[in-house]
Length: 343
Image (cartoon, rainbow, N blue to C red; front, side, top):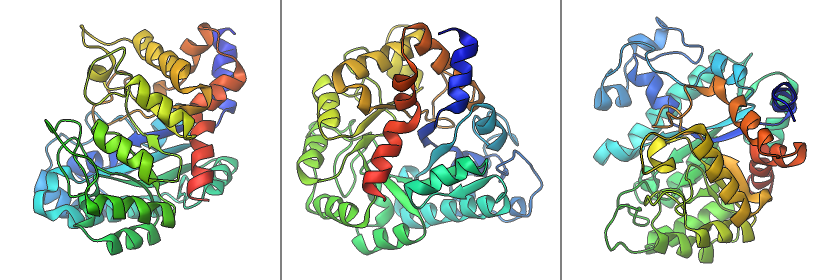
């Protein structure tokens, strides 16, 4: 398949990115709008995230993902995640502030975006020429140890949550906790409640003990929304071959991420090395269990921004991947999990 054919395939495919940190990035750049606009009414209304994290960056500088870039990159749906790890004792308030900011922005751009509460909303958005937003929370400390808060987050549209960040949480230990344990009692309650409500359980950032606890405790297909392969880069955030196999056997998805330090431990990461991770994940987990999770605006700097997404399709096509295989990696695998979990 030549480059032109690969780019045309990319335009036809359903493309889903399972992780970005753009919401907080907009706020920290002076309450930027989803179209990159400044001077909005929100820019005069700083909230909790703005107070705790400050307007650290020049207005608009360095943003990797917004409506124009998503459209240019052919991305049909994206998980917009709020990472509350650095909120300290304000996890819930921080999360709600960021979600409130994002949903207001989506409402103001209703001609271009919708919140996807069901998988069918992703297909509908695509037919209408809009981008579907899956609301997500990164780090279950957002719940402040209350399973009842999870139900309220679900009611406002949240459809995915990572159990931990890389540190210790009330639910489990992250991948950077030396000698950490697995799911706590609260963590097991959380997994059961997520299964019952229909939230996608995200195992990125979990340590291995916690990962296997979740595999045992949950009855749903799981995702690792932004991780790469430990066999190719020995980083605690990456997945072992056993973990990749388990995700495949459970009908889940391992989404390869664009964070350079997860891609290469020796020198600058390259696009070819990212493609190596995708190929390894396909070999181990299976073609039905690999996707993409950029981590744009949160460290996913291998690609300049979301407009460069077609470069992955072109690169994989050059390696011999056919239309059906590419369609699965680009989004159909994620869509299948969403259909199974959120309905």
